[in-house]
Length: 109
Length: 248
Image (tube, rainbow over all chains, first blue to last red):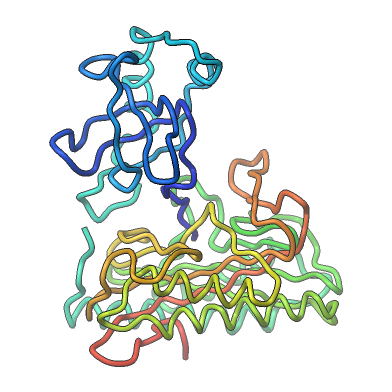
């Protein structure tokens, strides 16, 4: 059986991404903006809000197949909104999509 | 975490791999016009169980069968059912076994009767790309070397590698770290070490590499309906030449 890819090229604005490296290891974010092939801006509505997003290398993130369409639309249109919603959306995604996934265990679902 | 398998674990995986290879070989003989994918699945399940193994896919994340049967533009995860094979079809069969708690996973694409020149070439290139990848699976190399070899070979023949799905580590679970993409750059990714076991599985398309998920939530098809083939082996990294566990 084939495994679904969690690789870089799937990075999309509004997508859930969890940090794999850095002092924020394990912290979940939503993709705010794609800078280039290697870097993106992330927000989590808490320490990192729209006004001061976290810049990270995509290699240091684990992406998940969950996208906040509504927020993505607003962000792509250039609207700097949604701090409150971001926290709720991330919490929701972490429950449903992430579940038992872990970068440090050998188990993939 | 990437795990290195002990001698005992390797012996279990050799058994699981051999069972998969035997089942695929017998399944290949069953592939002919008129047979349904459901019949192939039942044959596979019976054959697997008779060897003492369990079908690894049945119930895995809710998958309802023992094999994946993907015909023509279906890339992977085709669900066996009432579909009758017709002359000219190509069918990719993916099968997994588990015995003593360890897994084997392999796939082959079979022609149904006489197929088009394009289909024959696609199958040949896909199978060969798998071996190009396996050649890179030696200590000191990296996952990216395998990925790049597969991609380069496939693209040099004018085909595309599917990117949304990847190969994987395998052991006491079906899917373990690391992911083994079929595209990439040499020199990148985790280092290969003796004791690692990975499933390398190129999925190749005649047209676009983009795939769409069918409404059953499982089957991936090429977005432009072009033909797709899939070959896979479970490979043990050794001090020397890689050992293909799913080959007789």
